[in-house]
Image (cartoon, rainbow, N blue to C red; front, side, top):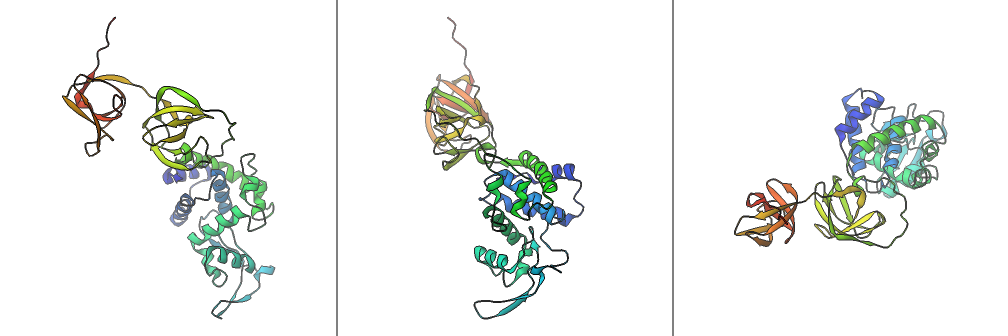
Length: 345
């Protein structure tokens, strides 16, 4: 997933007001960067709720913080002494720290073990943005804070932002955070520029199995998503084998459950909702022998040739080159083509 940061922050400020300090805005940018690099966030709405939680827990500052009052008057606010494997003793107070206010010595110990760091001995590590993000992501996904995780409340069947608060802290501020999450989901959907199957990590209904149907004559389509995953089968559960970029013309040879099987430039299956029929035109070759290349540039390898007078079908144009589909599929220099004159009966 890739997020247009400027677009996100502009939309955020339009929805919630201007972020008052540069360091807070930088903190939000850092948090978005961490989310971009987290392959475990498999639903965009999970990220919306995570961001909503940080907004609440960190008072809109977008930086990991220490709990106000540092646990005074609470059971977890009492000093605890722990001993590391080398026999060194550390006395700490395990009050809330980070993006989601990690508390209690056992939670620090568990997170430190899971993340492979010294969190239980050095709880101030929870204030490091990278570690704070990992604590939040792991804890909210796996239900490590209260026993329930994101997938219980946000899944293919429902999106319960109100009760999702139980992942962190009962129903305290549940309605407020749910309101944040709803707005942040809209902002994220409008700001994501690279995605799984065109729109990343958005839940899709399970398709009903249907037999593959041949696409008449190997139909041509143009990709409309910024980056469209090509998968090994007609379903999001299949592994991605490559991507095709916006504007690329692909040849589809079969269709199944809203997916099309393409043969190039990457062979596999793509979501049909991000394809549109390609416009084509006929041209006549004017060069004696014209190289057909694998891409729209002379540096690309030649995959064949077409001779003078040959009529070719072009479906796309880029930087003075045309993508043709027959008699050889590839790219040719447009300067050696002229519009074909249709034959009259």
